[in-house]
Image 1 (cartoon, rainbow, N blue to C red):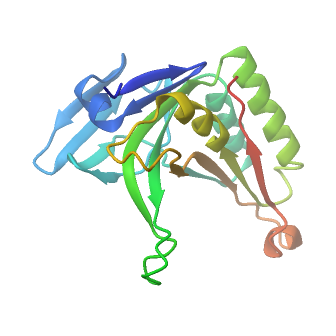
Image 2: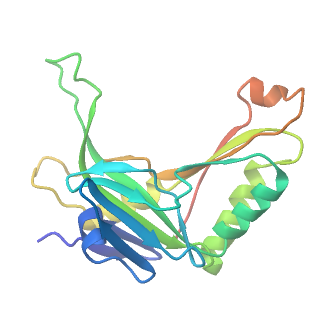
Length: 211
């Protein structure tokens, strides 16, 4: 039997269908003709989920900032960083099967979504907060004078969770490929000669540790 909501240390992984049927505290789900709209209290929750299609229709998280957050000044960055380190963060991730067929060149490398999950973790937890602060400080040298892009990656945490918890109807799929397993911060400076950004040197990634 597949468990739709499981906990892996400090991370919760919930199948989308289960999340909509039994939303967590602070969330409510409105049924629409085209799908669902999810409402939530923003005081304690930070939702970084774009609108998406599922087997249950179109899903919209009201007031979500989306998976790629854009900031244009130091105040916006400081405000968003404060939210990251003080609220429960919600993301949408997809477990996928990669098509490695050698008989169909067009299909090779394509992915098929097996399941969609809502992943959540508490950014204010002392250990998670420490990892996040350390990662942001390491990847961002000067937010005031340059543009940058930072990808916060949870792939390793999801791979660890999947070892014990991921199941599928296809017994040949024992290790899914994770899509959108994280979120992105984009900061746009008004500096005239932002050479590192122009040359692609301002892209950073850090792997968030939740254990």
